[in-house]
Length: 252
Picture (tube, rainbow, N blue to C red):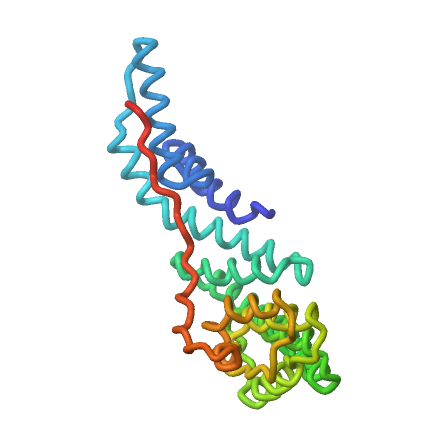
């Protein structure tokens, strides 16, 4: 990663600002406060005068905007230099992080360049995705079509209503009582991962215990399975929640 903007900033600072800025560049305000606490601890142990933490804090607060801007500019320059070698999510992260920085004219120009690159890459991926989805539907490759619907190129991409109806149709037609049980279960599993699952209407369930068990288990996600089983349609499953581990207190 380039350090051009950080080095340029450091070259403009006074001797008392320089070490504070260096800590800010390493880890923000927490790094400054940790360094001050450590330095004062050592000074006390050696019988030397301590430094005024309040003064250092004030200097750090004054420099924080400049150091954050320099860091972002270096990230942006690195992203621009990497071109297509940079992963899409990393490019998006740099663009998004600009919201947390007070940009100057140079940084706004950098941001505009990255936004253009991000838009172009997303459009390219969306075009490829739509072409693959269209080919999968036309060839009635149900597994490929469902996999693509479940994993669009980015979170803002949505399958069109017309294409969704086509995928629903081929998925429904493939879920018959005569279908190979293994393939039937694979298609059900793929369907559950999509946003169109509740619209899919299986024609039948193979005479196989594992298929029937899967149908019962997933009747909430695909209501038509409940109807085929003669069951009451259960409510849809709740949205998936990320479980967080409880914070454990350390013994004092």
